Every structure is written in structure tokens, then in C-alpha cells.
Image (cartoon, rainbow, N blue to C red; front, side, top):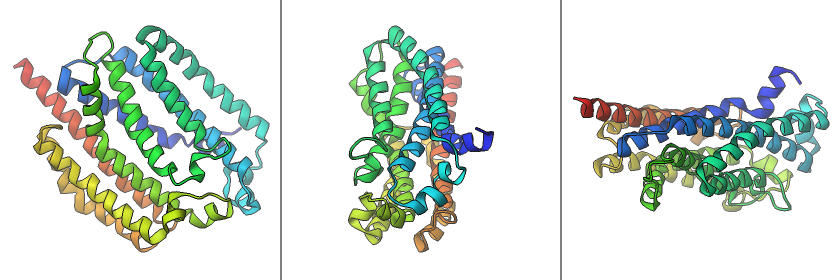
Length: 306
């Protein structure tokens, strides 16, 4: 398998978010507890990184195998377009699973059952997204489940690993992580909705009954706009309530630019043209938000020293 095909099947570009969630977790723990266990946190990141690659391989394989459309298999699926052997794809997929299994076993041994529970839930959602008698990506729950798993479960895992041995992780901490992650959750949900509206015809041909297919494209676009409104509004609200640093209010200045990225998609839903603009907007919001939280943590750390 060449580098280009590996990149496409693993969707390696999407793993940059795994690092973003780690930065979010570090910023969160330093803001609230002025500490972070980098050893366990970085090991967790490496495990999540390889799990992400493994699951992307798995999803591409399952989508190809479960497809009912020959057009999808031959002209859309990365495996079909490149005429790649399924045996080779499986070999790479299982090879990628070795690293997270080893690292995960070590982390569970060192940090306890909660790490195992988070890992099992995360991997389970990833596999069930495209496998089983009723894959999540063929139901109306797929978009929401994926958005929550990516933006909530991963940061929660990093925070837990970062606080191991300190005795600070409890239900209050978990709720705080969920609240801090909410803007990213709604933004990611928008990305899933955008993907669903652009793939609606292909999903119908493949027998997938997604949320977009269930409520219709017009309602999906209204839900998209409402979710973006929540993502936008939550940041200043949480800053005023001191859930996140005041410096995150600067992100409001970026809102007009982000909305300009979304306008072409709202007019026309095309996977190759306007969907990337939605991803660009989601990235701007998530990365900007996370970096400002990190800056807030650095400012607090400096002020505590002096």
C-alpha cells in the first residue's frame, strides 16, 4: 500500500483533532488544578491517535463491503477507486491495532478501570459506526453520537489521565469537562450534518436512514444553523460565568469570518466544494477556542509565579 492510499484510508489529517483535545485537556487541568500528568497524557494521545487510524481504516472497509451501490464501490469508495485488495486493507488495519492495545493495557494497569471503560466505550462507538446489523452511520443517531464521542469522550479521557495520582478527578470535574467541550460538540455536530446533507443521495442508494434523510434536507439545514448559533453563544456565556477564561471572549471577533465560510454551504450542499468550507469553519472555532483556553492557563500560571 502506497503512502497516498494509506493517508486516504486512515484519514490521517483528521487526527490533528486528537492533539487539539490534548491541548484542551492540559489547559483545563492547569486552569483548575495547576497540574497535568504529561507521561500518562501523552501515552493516551498516542493510543487515541492509532485508534483513530484503525477506526478510519475499519469504517472505509465496512462502507465498501456494506455498500449496495456499485457506483459507490467503483467511483466513490477509496478502496474501489484504487482497486486495493481487501486482504491488504485488513492487514494494515489489524497492524494499526497493535500499538493502542499495548499502550492501553499499560495505562489500564497503571491508572485503573475507568481508563478501560472509557477506552471500550470509545472503540465500541467507533466500530459500531459502520459495523453490525444496524451501523450507526445508517441511523438517525449517528451524527450526534459521533460528535459527542469525538468532542467529549476524548478530552474526558485526557483529563482523567492528566489527573491520575492527584485525586482530583470526580463527577464535578467530569461535568466541567463536558461543559467546556460543548461549543466543540455543537460545531462537530454541524460538520456531521453537513456531511449528511452532501451525501444524502448516496446514503439513500446505500440504504442508510441518517438523521438528514429522516428529517429532510431543509430541516437539517435549519438544525445546522441552530447548532452553530449554540456553538457561538456558549463561548461568551461560559466566559461570563467563569467556566472558561475571559480571554476566550476574543473569539467573538472571529465570528463574522467563520460565518462567511458557512454561507456558500447554506446555499449549495456540495461535498467537494462547500463541505470543506464547513470543516474550515469548525476548525477555526475549535482551534481558536482551545488555544485561547491554553493562553488563559498560561497567563494564570505566570500570575501564580509572581
